[in-house]
View: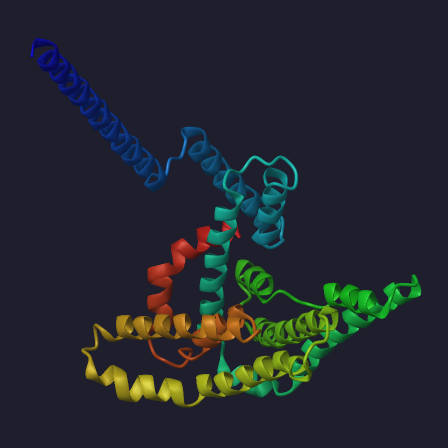
Amino acid sequence: KTPLVARQLSETNEGEAAASTTSEGGEFTETQEEEDLAEELSIEVSYEDTYDILVFLGVAYIFGEIAFHIGVPPLVGQIVAGFLLGPQLADYVPFPEAMVLLGDLGLILLLIEAGIELDVGLVKEAGIRPVLIAVAGSIIPFAIGMGLSLAQGQSVKSSIACGACFSPTSLGVAANALSGGKALNTPVGQLIVASAVIDDMIGLIILSMLEVLVAEDPALYEYFIPIISAVGYLIVLGISAITWIPRVVQHKILPRFSPENRPYVSLALLWMLVMAYLPIMYYSRASHLTGAFLAGLSFSQVEGVHHTFVNEAGSIMEWLLRIF
């Protein structure tokens, strides 16, 4: 009996030791998993990264002020600062993708303000001139680029691609340059912005058509989607922005609120329209930036919106545009 009892006691002790080891192993595994989860959820930024971004913002501001004082738009100086410190040369700025994202947010805010500031009366007086300027500003560079490429013996598709690189005019850059030069709200500035919107649309149509040309066996309708979406949205949403939308907001919605709250209600409605227009324009192969502009244009005739927008977003927009 004694050897039997001893063996049983030995087996019991071994089982308890194994169970204890398994328990410790389980606790270790759980602790490791918790640490891994905490590491995944945490976002760590070093002091060096923070300092480098502050240096970059300071340099961009100084270069913009220097450009302004020598008679050119601050945008030029800020572009130089971005080129010198960005990935293209010194690669000094950390998280360049985050900087681009912030710049794009500033650009959207700028185009909303450009739409709010657009004087519908001046655009109506301009008549067909913005269309003619936009067509000339798109077709002539496109023809030059395509012609130069064909003269060098390139294929037709390659030549179209070359022309497409020459054609687009950036609505954001134009609006930023005009804003920096305090010319956005002048008759010439309004004409340039209206032309840039149409020019942007033409450039997007050309680039979308290029995508179809390089695709294998594209369907016939794919050739017309960019044209229909760009022109259709510009006509439908543009007409709505200067006709029934401001009337509904001004005379149907805002009277339901007290006078002191009306500017903020208008700003909330504007933001809702922006959040609706951006995905609609983007996923239908039009420009989401044009959507931001048209949303702002819808409130250009609503009283108090521009003042409230500048008060609430003006300072933030200025710094975001320096990053842009």
